[in-house]
Length: 259
Ligand code: GLP
Image 1 (cartoon, helix red, strand yellow):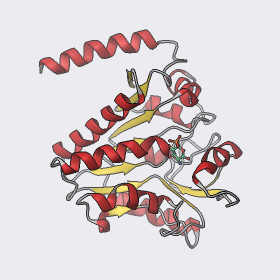
Image 2 (tube, protein in one colour):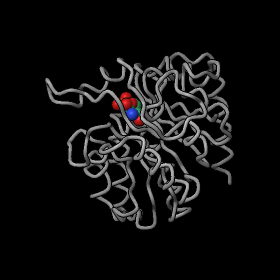
Image 3 (tube, protein in one colour):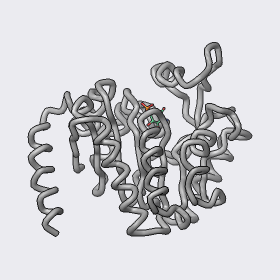
Image 4 (cartoon, protein in one colour):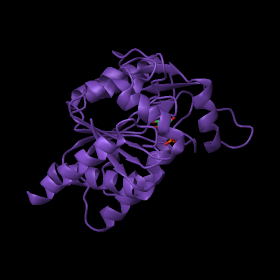
């Protein structure tokens, strides 16, 4: 894991935007795995700004991590709606190449269809991941099989609570979601994790320095050879080896600057 600690959330977001933009410039036909949640909102704002400055999305294909079961693409809290409003309709991507699991119909059929679509496009080039405060990735909650494929998952009470802020008062937060599996995520060629704020500090530590365990699904990323974890100082605050990561990054970025 390459752990990049930046002083502020704004700088962490900007670095994530840089990395996604660099991927698209290097491989215009990239297959990107995308994430939702509050952390990603400024990332999509940044990508829209880059698009206005010339970054093209026309060749890209995207697969989103997850979708709430029961919410159709026009529901304002669905992730399909989130992606359309926050990114897709602002850039030159072909909507026919933007895939979000369907929250409607039979969840098992939706999951299988999504998994087949990803397989049909080959591997994901870059998977963007946020981090749940309980260590979830996508909606793979603690206890998820580390070998799982796309399927329906029951959300933990913590996650339902954390995501309630996005729903109107009195509205019910769905209890299940269709999510890419952990094995599906692991097959991405490279992975970028973005986490900011104190609320994520314990999960960041468990992900990067804890045991590899289904209790913290993100910890499986320790087994992946191409992972960058971009975090701000608050999210890094519980890391035991923080000084080591800072020093390693200083050396690494000096080397990159010389190339
Ligand atoms: C959500 C999403 C995840 C996201 C995470 C963190 O429930 N399913 O993909 O990364 O939880 O969300 P936030 O960025 O709002 O903290």
